[in-house]
Amino acid sequence: MAPMEKSDSYQYARDILQQTYGYSEFRPSQQAIIETAIDGEDCLVLMPTGGGKSLCYQIPALVREGMGLVVSPLIALMQDQVSALQQLGIHAGFWNSTLTREARAHLSRSIHNGQLQLLYIAPESLMQPHTLEWLKQCSLSLIAIDEAHCVSQWGHDFRQDYLLLHRLQEHFPSVPRMALTATANEQTQSDIINGLQLHKPKQFIQSFDRPNIRYWVENKTDAKKQLRRFLSNHQDSSGIVYCLSRKRVEAIASWLCGQGFNALPYHAGLDTGERANNQALFLREEKVIMVATVAFGMGIDKPDVRFVCHLDLPKSMEAYYQETGRAGRDGKAADAWMCYGLQDVVQLSQMIDNSQGDEQFKRHEKQKLDALLGWCEITQCRRQALLHYFNEDYPDQCNNCDTCLSPPETWDATVSAQKLLSCVYRTGQRFGITHVIDVLQGKSTDKVKQFRHEQLSTFGIGEDTAVQQWRSVTRQLMVNGFIYSNNQHYGAITLTEKARPLLRGDIQLQLRKETAKTSLTKKPKKQHRVSDGDRHLWDALRGCRQRLAQQQGVPPYVIFHDATLMEMMEYKPTDRQQLLTLNGIGENKMERYGQDFIEVIAEYI
Image 1 (spheres, rainbow, N blue to C red):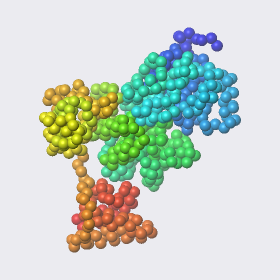
Image 2: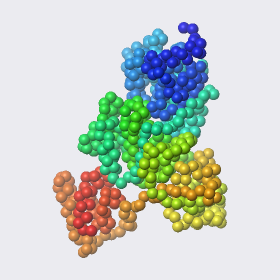
Image 3: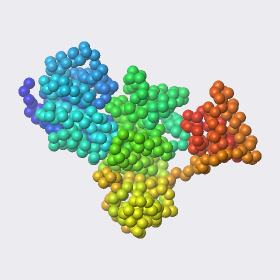
Image 4: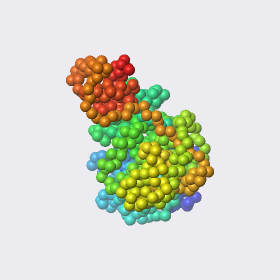
């Protein structure tokens, strides 16, 4: 078939849109992206989930002569993507490790006969030498690299196999390549272009805004109770609940089933067949809640996901944006709800410390975690701050997030912010926040002495403020754009132009007030004796434990150890959040036994 003129190719693309896909008009940027690919140029496409990325590579692959090759890390979803294309009358197939020998032979014949229009393939399969040699015998129209952020080692979803994809330029130099993702900051965008060795790519960066999603963040008190309250408005909806650990996934899924919801677990530790079955049920049925680790979700095409919940803090803003973006793909109203607590931060920090990355990687991951935590604590419109993180301006309040709909209590942090900014400046904008806080608090550490920072005018001016408060101020200054963490200089805190009017006193700064501590402060461990005044409470606590143990058919210590009862007696917690601060009480035991002991304690206060 003779090559078409440009104008004819563009018209053919519009015909495919209307006739094959059934849409009358392209969405913003789609037409320009498609025409770029038709012209044989490389491009980078950054488009939010639900924005129509798949059409951007499918249509030019159909217009250009040859077969379109789609690189995807999602073996489990290839069948669904191919099935959807086949429903449109498009000849598509997938090549991965799940194919039988007969299926491979049949697919190979279709490809060599020129019958296949689109082939989905996993990167580890594609980069096998025999696969590359085999594909060289085919005519390729386009190579689309989906979820391209996986190439970035600094991204939230790095995949080792993606590092080899730069070789595609060597093997198929005349085939245009299109890298697509929904989530990439400037660093990741640069990593994609360099890592894939795209040739002078045109960049199409759409708005990150998902106006139909309502963002809502709460401090974690009783996670299950908070989740149950949130779900009361989503009784008949499909959604995703993310948890940090596999054990928690299974516990929450089981608990939700007990609450009358159709909930399924999903994590990497499940049997492959069970994972595939649960994913299929979620994709094909209504009113299903998937409780999952981050192993679930990339590439999910289900349009009517009405909510995405996080019961634990995600690892980064990129991860949060990617995960919440799975809600409301159909453009209708959806919720992104999260509850977070200090224990999440501790757990994630420990995971980073125990990871196999080098110190630079760990430092980078902690900076990303701090940025997310700062976003959780902001007082202005969440959407503004979220988009600012991705270098996008959003001039007005969205009136579709918790800080717009229910403004938090704030405090005048102008002076504190000036102290911190001044200290950053006077230490040369060369140090991380830990050192800056040490100087503010007047600590004579080795590093302070080494750089003679005890001689600075800012040394000790913040000694009356706790480290946690300074870190909160820092995180909020960062998320509001007054400072940033310079990854090129080992995470040094650096001032932005926005800091100047604040330092001069031209503007006032209101920050979110730290949540009032309702939990009890633990005292140092020591030997306890039961006083005469507490004897009745002690006996009542032991009696309660004995009753519960008999009901469960277990020894009393399985319910709680004596040391835990001692702490109950000493601190006399009156609610679940306070009870959770005591040694030996986790969320599961809290859910099962907490209320019984709270009621006993209440009788003796």
